[in-house]
Image (tube, rainbow, N blue to C red; front, side):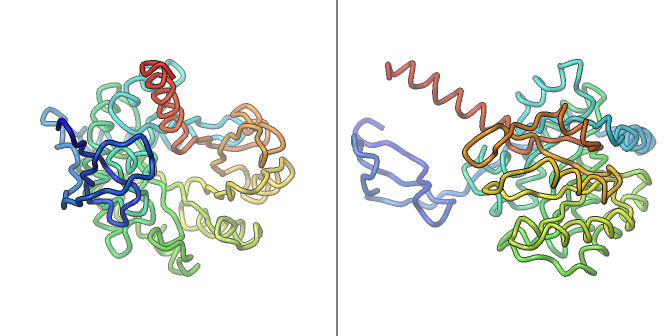
Length: 313
């Protein structure tokens, strides 16, 4: 646009705005015009055919069987068709999984702003890759979108062919914990809907967020036990990113939940005293290992480095 550039501004409070700004060497230049702009998500792949329900039921059963304490299912969470195809082509890949944070970032919004419809549309190209490779597909549905949980579970199965979900027990928009009894019932409801649709071995990875939001680790463990009793396949105790993850604490979680846990690897850092690899988490007895938005962040860092090289930085 010659003397002006059309830029997405992360500084605006409304993520659905585009800022029209004069070019400047200063990163703090003030936008002079704000134009309303609806964030668009890609259309559903026109050629995607969801597998039949008997196929999905069999795929869900096989997916569930991959969750073995001490020999975990390892998931390299993806965020678009390209990352899905790269991961799916690796011989070690047993299933595809999404990360809602990364999906939201691909359209320039925050995780808590991602709507159900946006999530489904962004998931569709990934689902197409999963079905092309014959892989189970599990999706991050955040907190289940409140009172739309049943609709959400039904749609990810019917529209996307998903055989599992991540389900959080904190309100996604503000971080408040869902009441314990309600959270247990939501796990049960998700599984009930899946059975009604025709996928009785649907996998729920129930995220227990008490420790994340400032509570005690024991509370996350207590909730996790109840989610397993309600039918969840595994429990993901989300560790605060500003806390060191110690092996003895992880071992306590794994032992308390009989290995039916999802853990994340971590690199050594100023916060993290010791790196924890997928092999380390297997040794501790986890049944599932996932990386959340890690691949998206690595890709973004690589893009930044490549762009700097192009610009001669």
